[in-house]
Length: 296
Image (tube, rainbow, N blue to C red; front, side, top):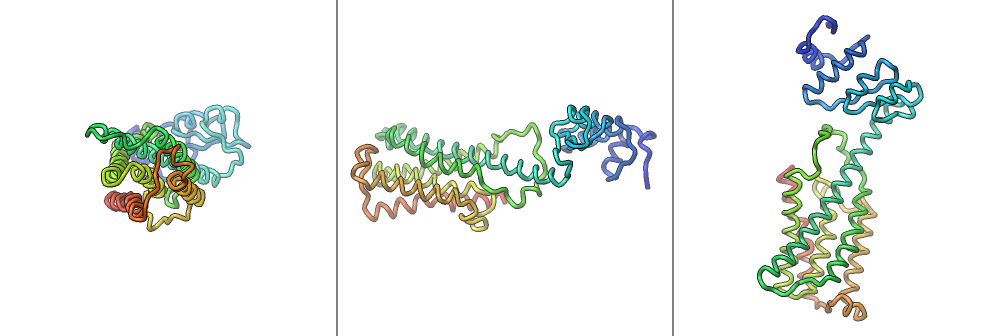
């Protein structure tokens, strides 16, 4: 069964766009009408073309992709991107890579903001209840420059999720900071801050410093994927693993080395205190596992 697009109106074009998958011998105007029909159905439309007659549709699409080798100058100028090798499989690879980059940017931002919310909460709540400052400026500087920066950089090179191509395209108007994401960041930050405050009120400022730093390092593994850490593991991004281990060593040095203790205003911890620090620092993992299960 076939339909002549010259003999149908706008509503029938919308129905044809849903029903048919192949359109032949269409005019430049009809190509543009099809794209408009898909837009009315809230679809994201990509258009490939190489000729002058493809230019209106390339311009109307969300993403216009012209052929780099055989494409005309008119088609290239009307497009958003140019496929240099004229190989359609390259488009799939580029989309996968682009989705991975976008996801990694979100992961790094999410990680940094949730950690900073935890730091702000720790300071604010302590001052609000009349406690002495649990963290000194040099300690906050250490956390922000060392234990935050290295994991965030490594999250930026996280391999793409295997199921990234199964997701529908995002709206071009969608913000990274939509309500669910902001709520999640605040919740994670408050939890990390609560762990640090508990270490402070039940122990001392060095324990607070250690828990705040180490819990953020542990939290970086939660940011790798929306899937459970039991499924993704911690070995998929070796750069992140090595950076976390490196930061843990640095954190232990500023606590245990006598020459660094006066600089960072820390004191040595006994075995019981280290056990408490270790348990509290691992708590972001079960919290995120529960959250992922609820959202999954």
